[in-house]
Image 1 (tube, rainbow, N blue to C red):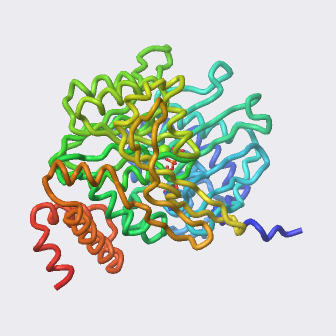
Image 2: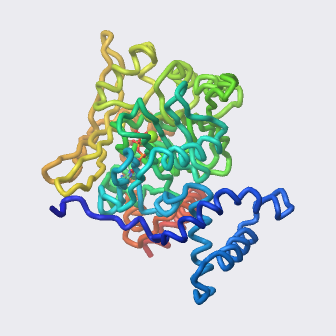
Image 3: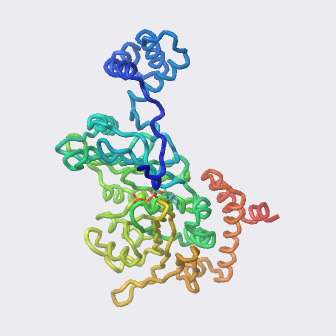
Length: 467
Ligand SMILES: Nc1ncnc2c1ncn2[C@@H]1O[C@H](COP(=O)(O)OP(=O)(O)OP(=O)(O)O)[C@@H](O)[C@H]1O
Ligand SMILES: [Mg+2]
């Protein structure tokens, strides 16, 4: 019976004939010779394509095939031979969020940004076919997958994250899970358009992240797997004042922060000889010697938490994501092993932003900031949380509960202005974001320019927007 529930994705763009399949295998064996015969150390795709086309013309029985067909065939064969073979097409589709190979003889699934979960017509019929893709991914990052280390965590050259497993760990054959890297990151304007948050919250966060230069906020974005934490952190980074010196520390480089003054650090796992590991903790420690204004830790989960909180308690500002399901749980996880941050240090966080991925019955999902809690302080050993914003699932809208925000009060105090003046600033920034949403200005580069303009001369920018 046709299963209509999961939409189909057409991944197999080309079916080789039996004769073509045999030639393809011959080519696979000859590819190395071909590359060598070019007499150059670098791989020249065009020359190889010409070689393959020539080979095809000689070998194919049907001499009446057009040059165009043969050129296309050569391109398809090269795709098969190098890189990720039949997966290349999926890997190149920027509309896919995730690609999932779940074993032998089973369809490859994809998660599409607009259509949700989809089943493709791509099915691997042997373990070897999948393992050969895993091996080429592993080779690129100088790692290997075998019975001794049957799990691979790696990154493709385009930045996508990959996890792979082989039997007997995965009972139905080797698996590959690819979290696609979006070349054009989602920005705060995109997130407002998706209703992940509204412009009132976004402008509040803008005000607090830059803190009018006197108190840049420390923020933890918290949520479940794939709830959009890294994306939100990235989107908020655009609000960091361009004057700040930023150092980011990540397991695998995911953040795409537009600022010029940025040092990106990436942790390193052990190499094939089991040596050379540099942990997140090593990098956070080192970042302190680099005298940053702001430290961004992609994902906080281990002993680096204490180092980070030490930094926050000594005048640096910081951002990070953390895996937890509520603001309370975020605190619990931070204060218990393996992070073990002393409670007294927790009050250096200004906000915990909770994000959730909510699955709909049609197989799609939405992402919402469900709560923003302000860390108000520690009273009798208990950390006090103050809810500032809250999402209402029934109306899919956000409630503003910020009658008293400690952070706003502090900014006002340090800057010597009234809360009223701050509220006006908040309102002004909301107008700007609204106008950007309305005019569909959402590309990161454009936004950075507009924000820089705002910092230089808010009045000029406002008069442009609201003549
Ligand atoms: N608000 C959003 N609306 C729509 N898509 C989003 C949103 N936020 C993130 N995404 C998409 O969802 C995917 C996962 O996002 P992201 O990596 O930010 O999640 P995460 O919570 O950091 O995941 P992990 O738990 O693996 O660290 C990405 O493909 C991203 O483009
Ligand atoms: Mg993440």
